[in-house]
Image 1: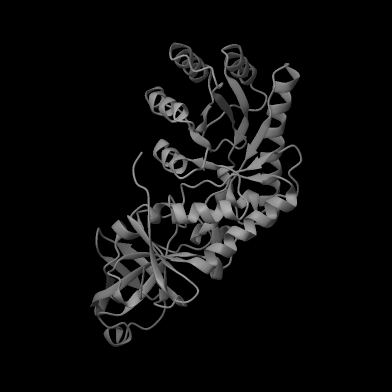
Image 2: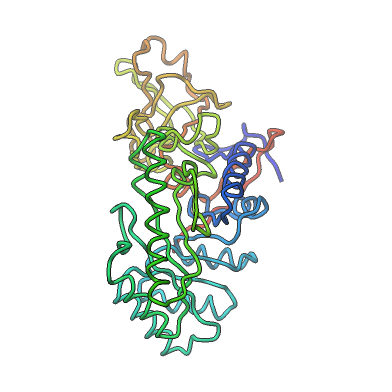
Length: 381
């Protein structure tokens, strides 16, 4: 069922479907040309029609950030699922239930203690047929988690898993520090560092006589910047499906590739302050200020017309829970009420698509014909 955009209540999360499809094709074609599988990270959309579009384009399996996402994907027929967060002991029961239902769920660890916990749990619950696959996380840039490629503990973890009767599925890494870059040469260098260190970790494990089938890397900036992926078997990337202002600042997408926006309505003015007040505060946009330390600070989002054209200098520079404050930069404050009358609809492009999407139960997907379709979005853990 479709409805015209004019009938939508605000704030509302809009997805430009033609842009989304082009983004999906762009990433899939790049991974195909580099000879690796694409396992998209679905935490960005958490939305079945989006995931199905990625699979239809050629993606193989999915990456998830919650076990609820894993269950949702499995219930929709997607069986190869990587839960890409080091698993907490209390979540092993939930993971086991998924595996016993037939989901080929693989989990992640980056420590001796974590590996021992998984092995002990699997033994206590006779989880050996089929053998539970586990990944080891590798730290390629000091960004967050993982073992260094040369850390002796890397081999210890691999041996604990395999001696414990589990399958070492492979090594994986995420170059999260790519979000701090904005030069092609720097992104290419980090992409090569990500590739080389993860491949090196797999090589060390194999030299120790332990099978390590897969090498999985991924971030949207490095996936779009890598010049070669020798030794890599799969890439995980997520935000490419919508892109956002952080990705725009990094330089891996253009303005006309941003596929997610928030529809908002002007509800008031503060003429003397140069403020336009809307009904999209941080409950709609999220509190993510990811562009604050980048070359261009977009505040809480870039303001566009209702049809999506950028309004130069217009940013959401302040946000309360349900109020957004738009300012026009160096533009004149005169006649704000006439230029942006109460009731006028605007669109806001978000800093971080994942965070903004998480504020809404549904997306309103705009197809090429202008029709709007409601796509539900997953919430919770």
